[in-house]
Image 1 (tube, rainbow, N blue to C red):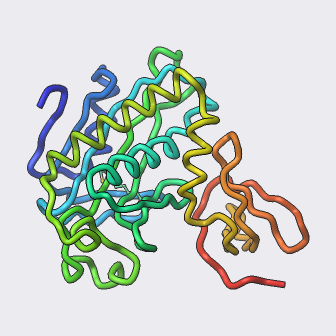
Image 2 (cartoon, rainbow, N blue to C red; image 1 turned 180 degrees about the vertical axis):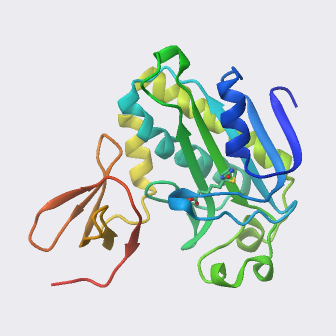
Length: 251
Ligand code: BTN
């Protein structure tokens, strides 16, 4: 494959891609590994990388976007992955803000987008879009603590897939939607994202940076890509970082 570094095992493809990008690797260059010993997700979580059963890849992008657009890259990449998987499997996928792809209520894919310092000159800016997809994983291969919440393409469709084939389709879809983002802006992509919003209208619990717990109804992402949550008093909060989870409605 052109513009792809294929590894049997690595610590984290995001770490490798970040290093290669700093050394000048071009837009679209990707790293794919059969397994990772330190695969990571958002908020310091680990990503279980069962050898040969999933896609663990990172795509370097050098987008022609403003620094304020960078947080939206995660959402655009999530939409691109969901579309590629729908095409491949004929199943329907939903998106959980900001970066998870779900099938029938369970997570089958996580995305970790990391960007270079945006204080450098614009021509040096890059982002790494890391994609982990559970492809041929059987339920008993997941770590026990994941079994209630994780799924794979195999579990949902009862079919096995070639990892390389999934990679090619996912990379093409991510690069194509990012190109659309550059050309036409975020609005159209955001409205497509919202049609797949798993949390829309759900009552959520969100722990702020300062440790405060906020409960509220999810209003979906705004046009800057941040999630809006309206609490019981009618105050709307913008979720800047942290994790949101489903909660029991508070009155
Ligand atoms: C998440 O669920 O929070 C995101 C998970 C992202 C995992 C992928 S696997 C390939 C790439 N390399 C990493 O270390 N992480 C991403």
